[in-house]
Length: 167
Image 1 (cartoon, rainbow, N blue to C red):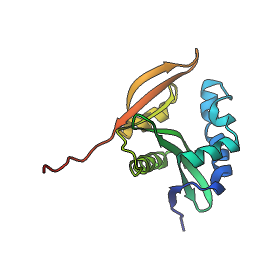
Image 2: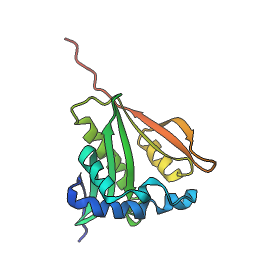
Image 3: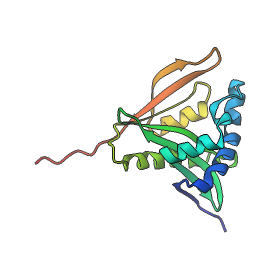
Image 4: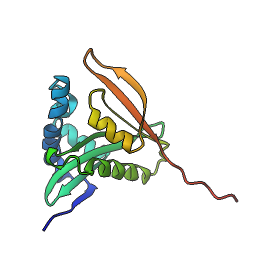
């Protein structure tokens, strides 16, 4: 009998599992850029707890195990910022990343503040990430060189606003 993956808001009890998953999931990124000092690998438990308190943090659970996570918040310009999308390596390529991305977009749109677009970034060599984001409707809006070996590709997706009925 198989289990379903359930996406929900993260709780304080999830912080250690999220941090461990993040550490595991970002190893391939670190390897891709030969940089093991990237933020997802150096974040502390306390820093993650602060994020949990101030941002929308979602987890994907398979039973009691956290197998995916994503974070989002709305900035002062009404842009829904999305970060740290991570899926356990054994769960990748089954649509879970796309489901987490859609779930955080929906969560941000339920916030009290209006969202005009969603924005995220990834490294220029992260081709799987770039393909996922393109499939989800994100388009490249900029590239910022961070070092000789790394550029961040910024992608954005406009929020579709339903047409208002004429009064």
